[in-house]
Image (cartoon, rainbow, N blue to C red):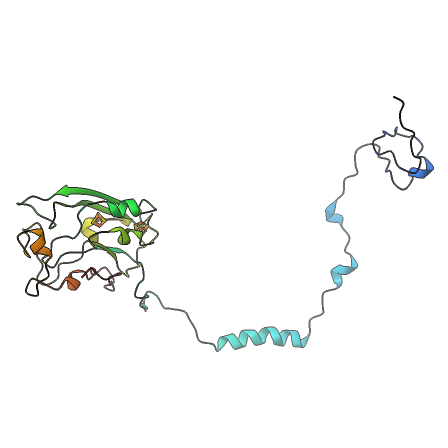
Length: 250
Ligand code: SF4
Ligand code: SF4
């Protein structure tokens, strides 16, 4: 098939123009004739344009406006907190360091079920359960938390673990001073997380003091040990400002 006739008004973009060939009159303003490598442009030699000098000239009003903002800020209330010399209380439901709570006779509420570890999205909790025996009892049920660790390098303080705990053993305090100079010490052990023994409590292992069986143990009686709410009070950490988050089951 014969080629279509070339329109003399349309430049032939796909047509190769031989180097040195004369440019047809109708292409003169549309087809650059390139021969050899493109020229190198030295951007450091860019000349200043007229727009580069169009910034407004400084005025006295401009200085007054800028420094006026500075001076007015000097007389505003300062929000700087002189931590750690002045410690401001956190919000009541602040999510801080965890606490493993006790029953009023001192036995541990943790039953080693690992639900907190399964609920944790950061895989920060490690639990190993152990069996209670009649001669060595740490909690009122069959099992107790033999090994309990929380890795505060991982914890994001979301609180999902305390929601998952069926015995209200695990709660959170408002202790937030968890900065240390090594990684190992930020893995808190059961001994560090256990709530302190309050008056009327006895360090486990020991028999159930509040009832011979679990039903009697959990039946509230005013004469048996400290009130349950007292047993839920979080431990006294380094700063002594801990409170429990979440209350307790009646
Ligand atoms: S607060 Fe959240 S991240 Fe921290 S241990 Fe509990 S579930 Fe895991
Ligand atoms: S803290 Fe609560 S959820 Fe976690 S192992 Fe103990 S009883 Fe189970």
